[in-house]
Length: 77
Image (cartoon, rainbow, N blue to C red; front, side, top):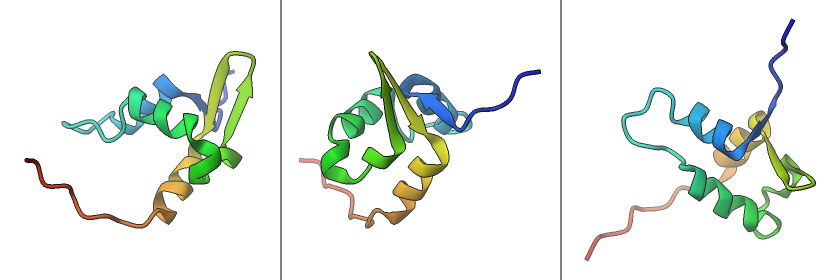
């Protein structure tokens, strides 16, 4: 019997977040960027590094997203 883990790899989390979206919400590259800067952006408590593997706590990530201030979209030049 397989149980669903709250932990996901970067690629699995990106696939989960973009499952029903016609436009990617978070790409694997954007999640990697957030993970690289996790100690600066407050995401660190939701990240586990085991050797070369990086896991993100899905519920913790969603709470982190909800706590982020909204910003205005940038205008393209």
